[in-house]
Length: 123
Picture 1 (tube, rainbow, N blue to C red):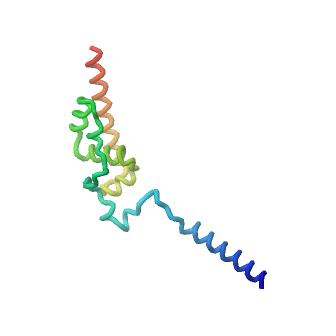
Picture 2: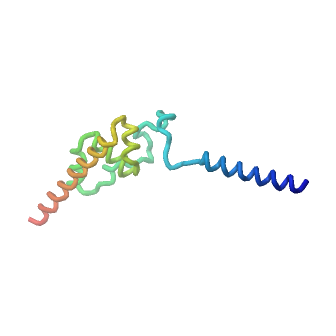
Picture 3: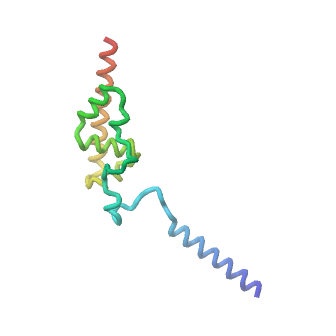
């Protein structure tokens, strides 16, 4: 009787481990396809801090405001929410390459604004 309980408990543990490995709970990424309304991009969340509220330098703020709406949105999602390009692309319904290109262009505009600002302060 005791050996039967012993073997059944071992088998139960094996099945339990196999099940937990196969169906592990992952909280890193959300499933955007099954719950599109929960994960749609909305700025109504008051805990969400926008990037323009964090920029204190007037020339950088002006450079940020001069970006297109899409560039500002991509930078907010990428920098503030720390989202990957692939996830942003899924939410916006565009390709990952498009997001990467948009972000690269926006950051280039920022670099140019910083170099202009440093050039003005030196001269």
